[in-house]
Length: 201
Ligand code: G3D
Image (cartoon, rainbow, N blue to C red):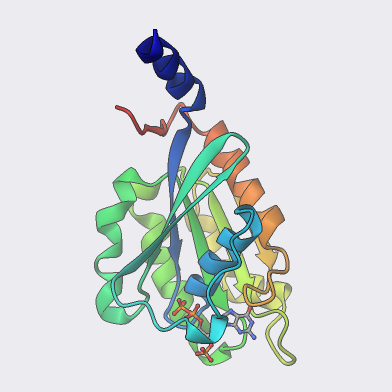
């Protein structure tokens, strides 16, 4: 009887899980974004001090629950030598967050080049895209329209997919919650094309 009941409870609590990649150049704010996402969606989690976040060597993984599903985030290092590893994760991802450092005007074009390479990969076809112009809290940063303009050549290479471009501050958490909920809705909507991982499978 116990086994039956615990099996039923486990079945009821089972959640679909989706992989979300967090990509962008180094220093864009990917790890800070992941940390603030965990804070916003995990009650009781206060996070680690932001000044203790260091450059990602390899990857960071974080898990949140929202809208009845789990999102498993993969924050992959953005240095040139680590970008060549990104495509190993493409076939199994359900959504992608692209993070741009709005303060680093000198490297916006490097970000565009890396972005286009990612978005044109055949395994990324149709994958919902959340495009975040980060560090909008900083005076003198590029605004969302300026970044849209800098990426205007990319528009024709996007193919058919859900896409949202937003200004955020990962450090202060501004705009993060709505953006992640939007992405969760998109990966759920896209679940026939890219089915979720069932943790017990
Ligand atoms: P990465 O994971 O993309 O390499 P990090 O980037 O999350 O490590 O962030 C790189 C630096 O940018 C960190 O500063 C971090 O605090 C800062 N940062 C990230 N997001 C924001 C933001 O929204 N606003 C501001 N003002 N700064 C941000 P340090 O000084 O530790 O290098």
